[in-house]
Image (cartoon, rainbow, N blue to C red; front, side, top):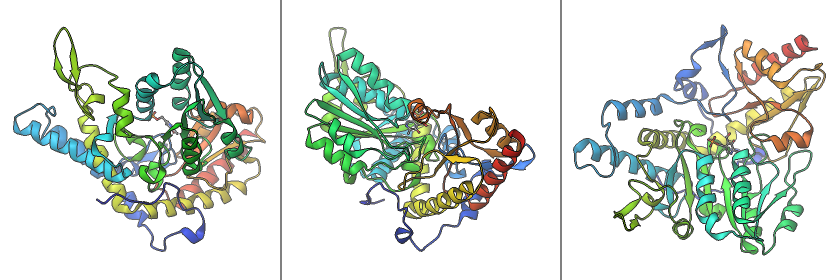
Length: 428
Ligand code: PLP
């Protein structure tokens, strides 16, 4: 698979859309979880922002590993161990090609975005950020891109700065630029907001940050499932994503970082695999990626991630982005036509997230709406989506969030709209 050069912003204008279309029926047929009734109704899965459903090919990769070459990796001389090692390292190659990473050994397997960010906070950032320095995030970050930086700031005496967004959920780029200074050592920003759907202008943000000498970490959790991402084109210094949101198992994800920065961060977890030599007097450390992958990795997860990324790439990342842009426009129209629905997150540059509240329903919490939708077989997420500051900004306890993936179709959004209308009738 050749590295792609396309930048990470999905086409949302109709003129950008490829003419070829995906065969959604055939894609749906590859997702076993879709073939079930929930509360007597065909499942309508609109919670892929929380976790995606898995195609059979990914499930098969897990079964093949556990049922076949189930062995530990890297130090085994026996055949099964060597097979498992080959599969794990092939998955790393898939990741490298998928995100356009310049070097294979810069791709570190982690548990997910949360662990990847904590790894950077406890290695490179811990060593290179000190008293008086600043870390700049945005006001639309997931908690996993807030709390590790707050903890780091407390440890090292640095200050956390926050760039605001407007009532549509669009980042205020003037404020962002004004908050950058020679004190800024790191910008940590979400590429696509899980609460608002906003696609941030990350290339411009990286350029502005680099101009003041700051490094940039991008949270790609909600970007990778929806279209092409290329870290070289983005120009960032660290990039993180979670496998489970991109059709892969839970408990596996990727941290990509520039080799020099990962090496300068040094080790984090100590233990097996990350060492060169251990004595009681002193231990010396292995090279990347082992340096940052102490202990037995999530072998099956990494193999499943490789299978998932190959499956998604074979569908066509630009086609996925175009399909989801169509669904987003369709779903937005349907929800806007319903009296009492207020969309939260209306950026003109948006990915497949439809967050809303119901204004006319007396005392109804988003979770009431979620439960009524569930009775219709429609799975959505309700609450603050681990982005409490976003909810505070809008003065709401949470939203109902329908989030899209490639296997959704317009019928799913029709079911959502019908379910919301029923919920309004019942709650008003
Ligand atoms: N960042 C964003 C934007 C997310 O949507 C999520 C999960 O919802 C995370 C980070 C955390 O991902 P994980 O729980 O897989 O570590």
